[in-house]
Each structure stands twice: as structure tokens, then as C-alpha cells.
Image (cartoon, one colour):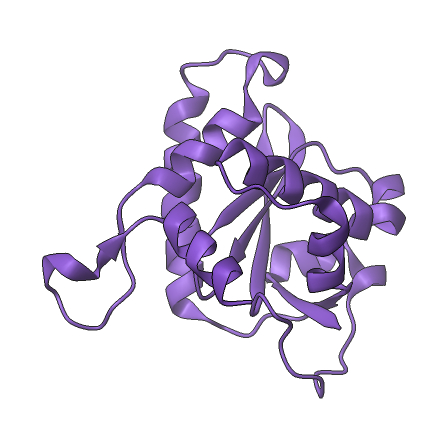
Amino acid sequence: MVTKIHTTKKLEKLAKKLISYDQDEPDGKLGKWNATYFLLDRKKCWLITNGPTKYNLILPNIKAPDLKNIDSIFILALSEQLAYDGIVLDPASLSSMIGALRFLPTDNDRSTTGFQNQRLFEIDCWKQRFNTFETMPIKVINNRLNSVPIQLGKQKNRHDYTDSISEMKNLLVQL
């Protein structure tokens, strides 16, 4: 099983060694993911968003030596964030669901890119509240990002509004 993560151009330049151009495989069990990077108090962080559920994950302070262990960093951060959000799932089953990570160039998914830009704006607003990187509770900020009401349906009625945490729960229950 391979999980595809499409990167933005900025992240593609930052992590050239990770990018694979072989896109023949189908998406993993959790669907496709999109990743971008941003600076948080002069630390390089990644914002990774699940396409179907719009579930966000922040990987804080990723450095060049961390790139060779990015699979384990991603799985550990995702399992910890899922547990913080109330979704209990052991890391071994999560690791089998995700499998290996395959980083691909951008897929120009404008919906997810716009969604990520809005989340980066919200992170920037919350950054003002916490002065330094060390005092920022990343799991709390992740939880806030995933608790914001979002609309996933095509129609504009109130039943289409949900949050990313409940959508991720629904996706994991279906598996």
C-alpha cells in the first residue's frame, strides 16, 4: 500500500530527494494528501491535508536530516493527533493503512490549495497569541484547524457542513 502526498512547488524545491514522478499507483486507503510548507517562528513546518476529509496535520520543525525518516515522523504525528482528536487507533494499524509514503509533484488541486491557504491564515492569526515556537501547542492548533466547520458537499445547505475530525472518523470507520 502506498499513500500519495502531492507537494506544492515550494515544498518540491525544499525536498527534491523525496519527489517521485511515477504516478501509476492508485491512491491509498485514506485517499490522497497534499502538503505545503510554511515558516513558524523561523522554523520550517509542513501542513499536510487529507483530500477527501480535509483533515490537517502540522509537522513542526522539519529539517533536512529528518527527510530520510519522514515516513515514521508522519505516522507518529498522525497517530498522536488522531488520539488527541478522540480517534483511538493503534500506530501499527495506522501504519498498515498508510504503508509507504510517495511524494509527488503538485496535482494543482485548487480546492485543497485554497483550503490550505485559509488554514495557514488561521495559523498566522493564532501565532500572534503564542510568542515563541516553544510555547505553541501544535496539537491544540491542529485540533482547532480540524474543528472549524467546513462544507464538503456541492449544495449549499446546512446539512453539508461538518468538521474534519468527524469526516476522518467516518473514513476510518468505513475501512
